Image: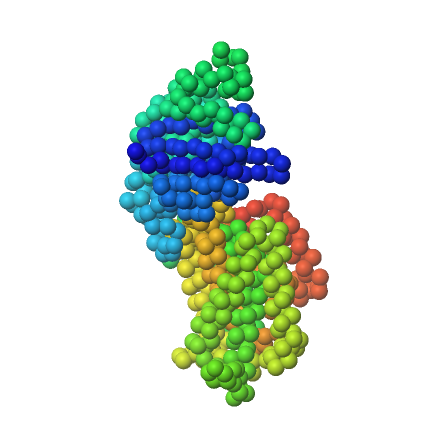
Amino acid sequence: MTEPLLELKKLSKAFGAVKASDAVDLTLFPGEIHALIGPNGAGKSTLIAQVTGWMKPDAGEVRLLGRDASHLSVAARAKLGLGRSFQVSSLAQGFSALANVMLALQARDGGAFRFWAPLRGNAALREEALGVLARIGLADRADLPVSALSHGERRLLEMALALALRPKLLLLDEPMAGLGPEGTRNLTAFLRELKNEAGILLIEHDMDAVFALADRISVLVYGRVIASGTADEIRQSAAVREAYLGDALC
Amino acid sequence: MPAFLASVSSREGMVNAVLAGLLLAAPLIAFTLDEPFYISLATRVAILALAGVGLNLALGYGGMVSFGHAAFFGLGGYVAGIAAFHAFDGSDFIVWPLTLGGTDQLLIIWPLTVLVVAVVAFAIGVISLRTSGVYFIMITLAFAQMIYYLAISIPTYGGEDGLAIYLRNQLPLGDSNDPLTFFFVCYGMLLLALFVSSRLVASPFGVALQCARMNEVRLATMGIAPFPVKLTAFVISGVITGIAGALFADLNGFVGPSMLSWHRSGEIMIFVILGGVGRLFGPLAGAALFILLESLIGGMTDRWQLFLGAILLGVVLFARGGLIGLLAGRARHD
């Protein structure tokens, strides 16, 4: 059996009486898109924070690439191969798109403790960064400061930054948000290709995209995974329909 | 100076070159007119600008608003002062576990300053950088005040009265007591610090540091832990300001607790903000304007700081890039 890229074991986190994560078990295997859906307040953000390292779980374990990552820092988890995009774009606003990507590449290759040669002067890194931007369709926006990019372009740059790390797994937090129909179509096609490069844990509200993409779907409600299975299984699950999907999909 | 121009726009590079040229020309003209006072004034500008270059690295590029850089400035001063005191006195600084006397050699005093300030800046940084925002400002201030009161409470080194340096510390070549020679030493240090800063800021380290200022979450997500990057920058920043302090003590022939006071921290911050936060030559522009105001308007009225306040207000409200921003336009995005 192949080893999971990500494995959550009985992950629990409570804020006072509220159980934001209640013994969550979840796996992500290579080559797969595993979608995590759930209504607002289901504990998705808390779960993401524990996977990426911003929050420590009260109990349970986060395993990345077969090793216990529960106590690793955010940066250390990224180094291991965990890439992510944010629900609300999180970029270095004052830099150009190119500089953002070059810094990400530098982080992967040599780290930040290089004090003398200018980053911009690194021709090989520049080439590679332009390649990453071209792949995502931002090549002609490379020299613009992030503050001059449109919302959709920032979402794409987020993706480019995650890809620059050559991640083994990606955690995408509502990548479709605010993209519009065409953008959503393009990104859906792109993610379908991408999953062979890196397993994807997809948190998404766009149900069309989720059902089109996901190999497996887990449904989180009040901090608990109430159902997990293929798209068809989830569609037919009575519990899920009651808790979340509503009558719209019947 | 192509290396200076590397990280700034061509227009900003020109403004920088003119500023550096003016600061070099002023004491030379003063020398030919036999006006030694103005040589010492230009030396003050160079030294205070150097202190600002140090703070700019933390505040301007790293977004760490340190209100305690007087600690490093004063420590540098006390290293120079205490070394000179023991050299003059013939007494020992410590006798156990090894005997250390004083020295009046600048080439020993400067590395010693770097060492002492680096250790203290590391200790202050490790604790302070766990906080941010207002708390960071307050905790750096608190550390600086602790060192201030420590200096006051040591009678051996003058306590509240400070310590006189009777003979300026010496260089192997050249006479440091000659005002023009000492100006060149300080000016050279300033250029060196600016050069090092320009390289640092454009290097992967500097870009990561600026990313930490703009968005720490992004930096960590890329796989670079922000804390060690910021701590390293804080230490380098402190060391540069510390060297300025050592030079300042030698310029004045005196070091006292006033060099450690929070007024001094505020002054260094004013240089940076007046000149342009995160602009390479900002601290030079700021320190020059500060000293000009102090000596021109200060000659007419004791309330010259009223005018400084008005100008500072104007800069903060209307010229976010400070003087450099006013002269050279917005910072380049890259």
